[in-house]
Length: 261
Image (cartoon, rainbow, N blue to C red; front, side, top):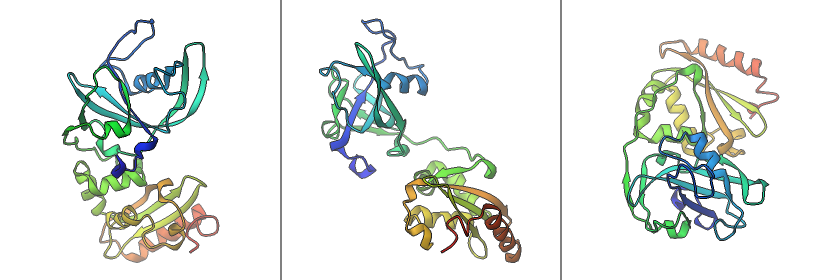
């Protein structure tokens, strides 16, 4: 977990059981439950501290059962705090995290404690990995719908299921946009000459800034990457340069963005 950016000291590991209705009458989950159902179920926990920690950690790693002692990774969640409580339960605001995203629905571990549905991450770290399944190829959404976080861009660069994406991005030059979601500032970049969009984005995936001074001063974890316009590699550089100037002006990314460096 530590290798995936998850601190075991700040992490709770949960393995849900498929129980349609609990003894107290509350609804559980089944193999047919949607992600929204599982998230809602995970968000509500017992008020009794012997059942659930009084001060649960920030990160929750959630597994779903597969029969026997097998448990498959569902999601890594960030606990943003308790939102409400009643006489028996507490509700938490949970958000899906990027950590271990490449292992979702792929990592299967041996859950050694069938009677225990939650353990600390230090304990879970000793559980045997049974399988890391091959990922299904991801379908390229099209340039006009492509929006990637920095973590997602890193996955595109390194994971086999994104091989077709890499081929597609390497086939074009063009103008792209990086947005820092913390303050909404934009950076307009281009891939021309000997470079294609995939080559440019590989640099951002590697170091977060691609050599740009303004980007170097920022945390890439809040970046979002998208494509503004694509060009055939035979397009004259002057045409691509003109498009870059246009988008910088349209988005005001020199005066009020990250193109000022």
